[in-house]
Image (cartoon, rainbow, N blue to C red; front, side, top):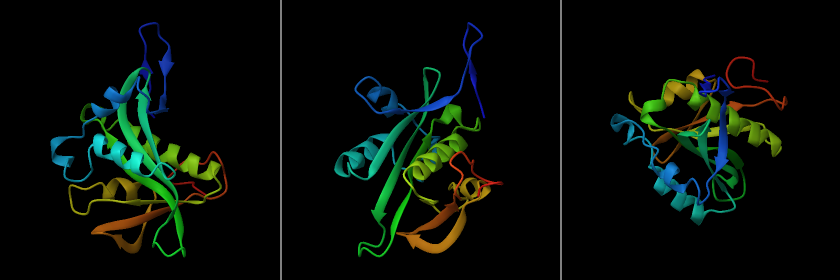
Length: 175
C-alpha cells in the first residue's frame, strides 16, 4: 500500500472521507484518465445519484494525507432484482485520479468497502464493470473477484467472498 511522506518525515496512509462542503470541490476535481472516461461515470454524476438514493449510496473521497486521490461510492443492502428475492452490497463506482493510478489506491478502496460490508454484517462484495480491454475487469479479477455469469445492463457482475474475518484483505487469503 502506498503512503505519503510529509515534509516533517511523518508518513500518512490513505483514508476515506465523507463528502462535505469542505471537500466537495476536491471530490469534483477527481478525474480518471481520458481513455477511461467511457468506463466510469464522473464524480458529479455519482454525487447526484447518491442524493437520489440516500439510504443506499455511500459516497466517499479517498484521501492520502491532505491530497484527494480518488472517489468511491458503495451500495448497501439493495434489492438487486427489484422483487425482494436477493439483497446485495458492493462497489458502485471507483474513480482513481489519473495522476494517482498504480499506487494501490484502487486496492485500498476495495478493501475499505469490504471492511464496511463486513461491519454491516455482509459477507460478499459485488461489483459491475465496463466490459472490454480498456475496462477494469482485469483489476477486479486480479483482486479475487469471480464472475457470477450475470450482467447488469451490459456489464458483467463480479463477486468477492469476504469470509468472516473482520480485518481480512482482498485477494489471496480472503476467507
